[in-house]
Amino acid sequence: MAPFAFVRAEKVRDLPELSRLASHGRRLDPTGRRRACKDLTPFNLAGSRYSPDNPLDIVGAFRAAVAKTGAVTYGKAAIALHALVGISPQVICEAGGLHDPRNPLNKKLVEQAVAWAEGIFGLGATIAWRMDLDEEGGGVVDIFLVPTRIAAMNKSSKKRIVSVHGALDAVRIEHNEKFSYAALQSSWAAHARANIDVRLQRGIPETSTARTHLPPDVYRKVCEQALAVGQGHIEAREADLGELEALAQDAIIAADRARGAAEQQAAALKRARMRLHAHAQEELDATMRALTLGIQAVSDGRITGLEYDQHDGLARVVGHPELDDETWASLLDALAPAWDRGLPQVLENLLGARELAEGWRSEHQSSAMLGHQRMPGI
Image (cartoon, rainbow, N blue to C red; front, side, top):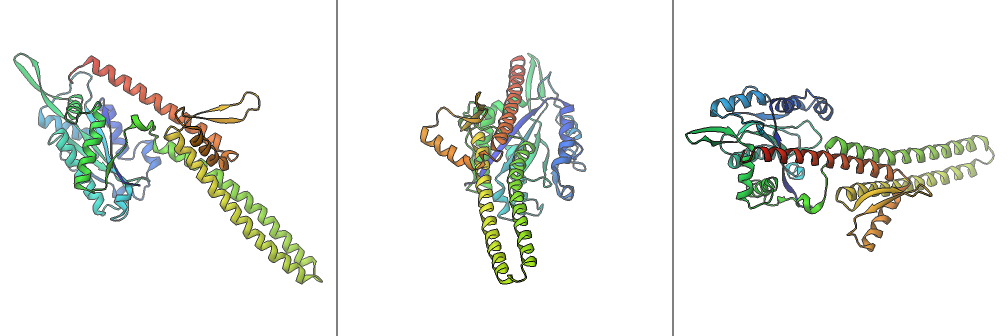
């Protein structure tokens, strides 16, 4: 699969929110502690022109930045932008370890991500950046931006203000996109392709794929549950095989006169054990493939729901209405190996997580739209 360049961005509403982001970078919050590997935390990369001695102090960097530029915050408008800028980890791994601070592609990603952000939001807009090397994933740079512009307060007075919305709208107009965040994706993909790796592509817009972004801890929980289901079946098969071996040993001890026959039986049981183990492994592989396919089908929208028959209580998946019968039948056949091994529960949890994520995103977008309507031009 071709590697991708991607960017996610969220507005920072106030200093308490910025402080929470700083706590995460310092691994002081529960989420940061849960996701991080303590042995790798000292190797995390970070930098700030406004707080060079303590680049993780993004609140201090924010205050130093607005003091230096003379910019002021305006009303209830966002005070900063938190951007996660990255590329597919497979590209990073081609040059060394994904979590190695000496990997030249990790260094190049940081350099180009900051250069791109400065080019988009203005020289000096980046107040701090961070690359976490202590989490399971990689290839992502957290960039904290405070874009500013000169605004007319009245006929005779102008003032430099922090304007996140204005900066995002300028990017949208420049790239002729309907949404500013889509414009950021296009801009970063072009920059990364030109300056990091020509293979990097822009991702397919979310509006076209209907995919839902899941937080890493939610996705990890779903995968762990799927793995636990498969592992449980392997352990059960191992227990059965252990009983067979015990019976074989008893037969050898008890059948002194028929030792030759008993040894032949033991050999046959050993071969049967190997066949059973191979069969169990095949079933596990088929189960894991089906579980993974189910997770992907929920993520990409092929599976939209799960319903239970009112008569027999059996679960049935609900497919996307645009899927043709042949494609849907093929998908159901591929899911069959995991259906009696916990797949309905995994799908139910995943669909619930997606519903929560979509609800949160809808609420967040509604709040953002309300804020825009109250303060046009900011």
